Length: 363
Length: 113
Image 1 (tube, rainbow over the protein chains, first blue to last red):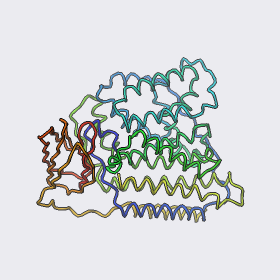
Image 2 (cartoon, each protein chain N blue to C red):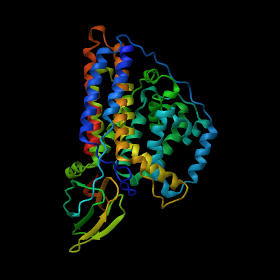
Image 3 (tube, helix red, strand yellow):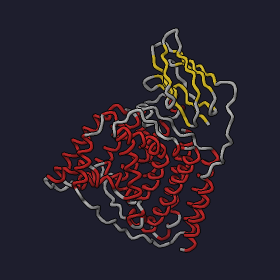
Image 4 (cartoon, one colour):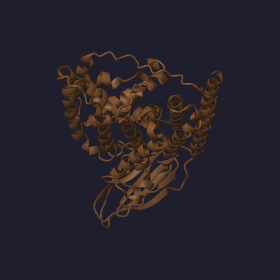
């Protein structure tokens, strides 16, 4: 939780108590193998794509006009707190909200309508997200440059390829749409997750999202500072480690199983950024209205509440992930390997979950 | 199927139990202040535990002129060659507070419980 540490005077959460970390990891391990034993033996979740969002351009126009009025000093809070964390949390609750709000999507109204190259898939989104997380975690001062580049690239992409560009190549929309599949308001999250289209670069998007959040925990720790390895190297290594371990556990099924990592990402994001959103979110709103000396209320970040949210989010994400992966594995694996074939990914998920909890302890 | 539901329910209950940390007793701040001597030239950041309400005294030496600040506490002091920065303050809330030499050299991390 260091995003704003260099920009504003932010306090971090207390480290998670060790006993909670150990209990959480034990619950995850136990739950995973119990689930393997007692869950269904034939696939249950037919893929159901949640209904299309209402596409109402005046909302975007309103957001675009609003952005012009945002005071300069409010931009870091607006992007790092309200957009990056707020939109993620709203997406989990309500569905893919960024698609509705993104003012850059206005570009699709004047599109040339060229077909989006299938081979590109989500790769531009993975690159965009990596660039953003680099700005967030390594070099927050580069934010204005990132925003300008992001706007230019996405307006150009939208004009050439239309809505398909944002759906596949805009990192923020891909992130918001993936998390939006978890929204309980839009039908069964398991069916929505199972409907995730497997496109080139999907695994890269997942690795960037999980790896960067993990590095946010590692990179701010005193132990990491003592190593004096450049943060850029650390961020790349964390993303590469997630991608490598995931592909090693899934072999050739990395793409068709990638949707099952989305709940783990959501759990990590909520655990790492809950207090940032709850406390700095107040300051962000004050800054938007031009109030600079605002002191946020600390109440929503009390140690007991924060620890409960963190452990609860990580474990809930883990359980949903295990169930989704189980259901998909039944489709992918030959009947004789239904049980044994699931073990590598299951162990990896337990590793990610225990690792995520350990980072909240050691950060 | 019913077994699976019951199991999931049981796990959530278990997770719920696990996620309630024991309420810490209101710690009375110790009389002695926490005194730390730090160097901005050769930082070796550690995690140091403090108690809410305890007073903290930091002395930071530096060969170069540098600003030292404590995130979340709004105290700031300048250090330069032969003239260490001295910061004395009390943290009256819990949390993790980074002491940094500008722009982002971590000197020590205070964990206040």
